[in-house]
Image 1: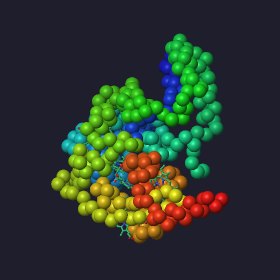
Image 2: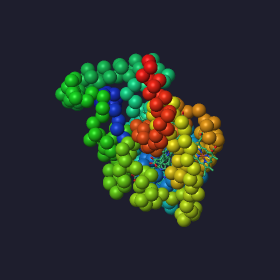
Image 3: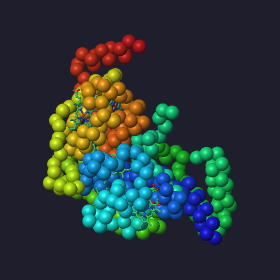
Image 4: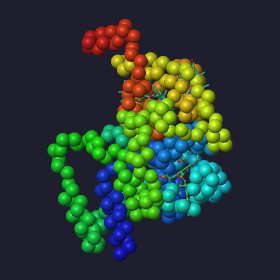
Length: 125
Length: 210
C-alpha cells in the first residue's frame, strides 16, 4: 500500500507541469534525501528584502554556487551559514525544521527559474 | 540520470499506471482529461497567470509538509514593492531607491551604509545591439568589490572577454543575472547606450551588402 502510494507520487511528479516557483529560490540537496529529510528551500526574494547580498556572500562566506557550500546541520548549529542568523536572535531558530526543509522529496539541487532552467532550447553543449 | 535509473524509473511509471491501487486509476483518468488542445494559441509561452504562484502550488514546495502553512506568499510581499518586468517581477533597484525595502548591509552594525562607487563601464557590443553600460553605483548598493573582483571580473576595463551566450550559460554577468538579479530577458537594462550614428551606419551597410 505504502509502496503504491510512493509509486503514484513518483508518476504524478513525472507528469506534473514544470515547476514554477519564485525566481531565485534555491533547493539544496546534497545530503537531505539520503538522510530522509525534505530538501531545504532558500528563498532569495525573502532574504534580499531584509539583507544585502554582501552580508551572506562576503561576511558569511556563501559561495555563488547552489549546493556548493557543503552545508550541514552540525555547521548550522555552530553558527555557520544559515545558523549565523537562524539562532533565535536574528531569526527563528533551527528547531523549526520544516520551515527550511520544505521541498518535495527528491527535488535536486537547483536555482529556480534560472536562465538555463527556463530556456526552451538548451544552449551550448 | 544514468541508464539504469531511467530504466527503473520507467518501470515504476508503468507499474503505477497499470493501476496498483484504485486511487492511481482515478488520478490517471484525471490526468488524461486535462490533455491540452494540440493547436492551442500559445504552445511554448508560459501563461501570465502562472507568475508568482502560491507557495503550495509552485511545484517545488511539498504541499504535504508543515512548512508551506507558515511560509510567506511572495505576492503579499511584492504587493508593496515597485513592479518590474522579469524575474521576481520586482524592480529591486527602484524599490531600494524609493526605500520600499531597507536591507541591512552589516549584521553587527545595522547603521552601516554601503560605500558606493559611481563609475560606469561602457562595453562596445558587436553588431546592432546598443552598447552595454555596467553601472558600479547600483551594484555597490548590494555587493562588495570582492564579490566580483577579481574572481568574476579583473578590475580593468576591457580585460574580461564576454559574450551573450556566455552570460546565458551563467558566466560573467550571468552569475547573478539569470539566477537572482534581473534576468537576461530584460535586454535594455544592460544594452542601454545607443551606438554612435557612424557605427550604426557601418553595421547596416554591412548587412545590406550580403
